[in-house]
Image (tube, rainbow, N blue to C red):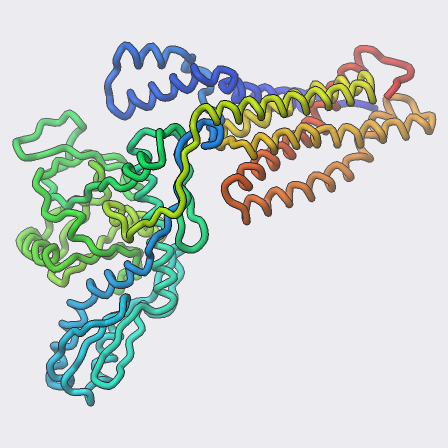
Length: 558
């Protein structure tokens, strides 16, 4: 018999209503956008003006307020393609390593004689010793400074340093594995810094992603020009190290002169407020490097950092006189971490320990370096898309979608009559579900994404066509209409699944291997495939069953 259990019917209706509810804010885009901006401003700045309250009241609080974000080609804005000079980090690493190499070789003065750093190619450290016969001992001592390479995934690899001797010259460079890990860290640090600076400007849903080995694509909708975006990225975030006075009870806690209250909201700690001395011990200018590592005694993940000579001396003096006291690492007025000083730190480097995982130690090391770009950026491409062009793109996309929609509806009704009407209703719900899913996941809709939706509209009725044609075949065998409909859905299911799985695989490949517009197309195409299969198999069938139960026709025409 042609039946659908009550719980199944209720579940189908619930899914459809939920999707349409989340899609609904997109029909009131301007109102919801002003509401969201007002809510974000009130939460960020803690002020409530009449204008902000009026904007917040434009949309009910109890309704979903997630929107499909409009991409650069639809809203207008600026686009930059930047190249990161990752090789500069190698030289910085060698400069920070020199004090440790010098101290190790000084302990071998009887074997290696006098030492002197000499000019070297970028990314290498060359040290000349006066007794070349002690080169083997010098190489062994410096190799002992190396640690296992730690990738972004936490995997341990070969030593970080490649140490060799040539004549009377000791040569130190980063190993190939460490260079690759350093490149990844440098790119991730650069992306994090750019993202923090762009977010600080309050722009909506920027796209900041890595392209290739050493390039970053930056797309910021709603910004005036590419030059404005370049100036924004060029600003300097502030990283400081402060003595901790005490924990604060809240943001309004009373403090004395030359003290400040700073919140802590990090991946490592829960939200907490600290009372800090206003004058920092160190600034981000003194930090040369920060990397995830492992404690040599406990094996637990830690974060190590390197200081320049001036910062190293200042840190040494401070830690000698403040053993057992906490100090705070502050970035953009947020405490990243507040470790306790375990002993004097005079080697120009330090270690931050705590309840870290590999992922959290990696993220904290990135944030520690987020006060300054690790390497220079060269802008290879820049472009500005005006809002008028974005409006034209939206209008063109709307026209294309409406034309495709109307053509499919006419074809289905003309070809399958009443059943075509059911398929058309499911198609309308399908488009609503697509926008509902896009809103929930916070996806960005671009012009290629609209093309994916238009393609989905054309493909969405494929499953219905297979079912209806199968029902026609079953009717030719003189089966009753109820049995023909039931068998039509059952026997067309495998063909529907096979056809859509292959298309979904292609969409997945496009998303994994593509970037930018290709990804936008693949996202809407993949979501459209899932929603169209759901509406074809469940929604259309539910409509047919309800109609059949009410009409009880002796014969049907498909």
